[in-house]
Image 1 (cartoon, rainbow, N blue to C red):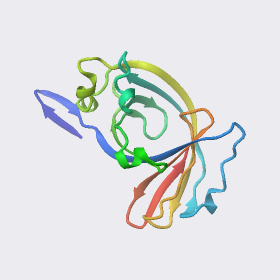
Image 2 (tube, rainbow, N blue to C red):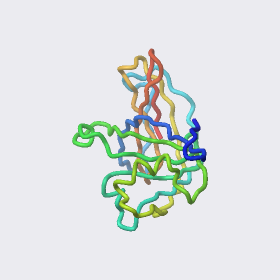
Image 3 (cartoon, one colour):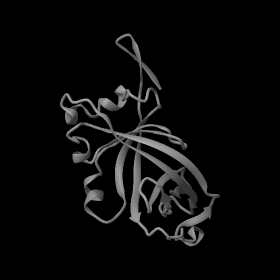
Image 4 (cartoon, one colour):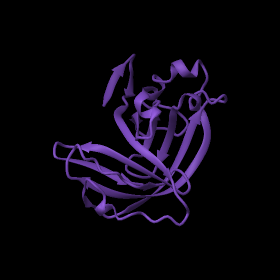
Length: 183
């Protein structure tokens, strides 16, 4: 969506709720039979993406200290700029899945953080400019799962962003089902 402000065009960020849980697994771990997991009605074919993510922060790691993630990622279905705000208090305290607000903006230039994301960071940056701090190349395989009801969201294994790790994530899908995937 485009808006006009002060004579220039700005891109607005889309907003969503990320719900995920991360697991550390051994190098020889095998993805379980997802079709037998509670709440999974159907599984799709696995899909592998090659991702490159560049993470941004200040020299003093002002964002990481507050559990804020700012990255630009290419590859995969969600290529673009991602801003993950701190987990909600209830989710951060327990063993359940983390719930974080995530904002997404188009790829744009690799060296320019979109204004639509920066506006959410000014209070934390206090004048500092976020710069690249780490680059991760990841081979991520996603195993799509479809749930039987919206209230019984399937877990989804995701191998990726960390060596020997899985992430499970869910996102609502319509009134009669829930989607998730393992990466």
